Image (spheres, rainbow over the protein chains, first blue to last red):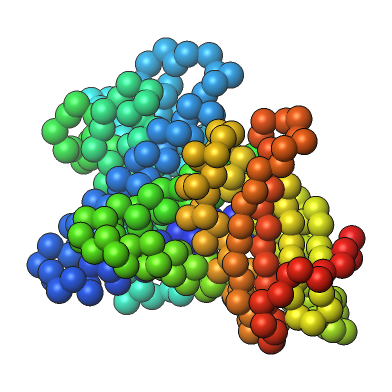
Length: 180
Length: 180
């Protein structure tokens, strides 16, 4: 427990530092993009380091889907203490990983106004995933989005985070099928 | 295991980001002090948050030494997975906490040239301790120093980190006695 909090608190401080830092330079225009890219870059390098440790005793992967399942299960459990709830793919290189209770957003209050703040807390994790995949030989673009789940009962898990991974493909998530 | 690494990697990225950031602004003079103070500030806020969680089921402390023992044992174990190896005090408000295998430095190679880099990896932890103590009603100054332990056999634990805490006192660590 304690260690999760340690990581979560440090992550929050880091996001807040990077955004404050940018704001103080008075370059409001570039702000958003620069902060996201800084956080994503930090995540990328950490993701590369983590995947080396996590895979050192694993057999090699037989295809991209196999890699993606590893990310959804082993990688996610090691990093975020739970596995991805839903993996979809269009079998052309686009993958959608849905986490219905994403660890770095559980401290958020519920409500649309807070959801607008959510993307900056997802940038680092996008980088983590991209870094991990990069070291497994898959150069991808990773984006994330958050949506409210209207039917959900618990306050804490009422938002769903989706990580969308584009691997050698044009963005197209309309035609995906569920893998688990 | 994984989670420790997650925190350690993020911590390293953060230190490197903050130092790079400062360097790119070309203010070499103020560099060192500003970076240390930024990291220390982040640690301070995280320390405040952590101690609230760690102490919510604890009985209240009977004196400062009792607080300090809690920091050395429960707090250190929760954050760094081991307890402080040695606590000394001069009974006038100065405490020296010695950790012979400090978690955030175990990845360092051995040798004097790396020890010079060590202080920037201690600033965040100094803040953690100061924040924790602050929320327990002790406003302190916390500094850290690293020294090589000449007699040590293991490469990994060959440096010793000391956190020196000044509580309503003039700095004086010459006359301290061991508490455990």
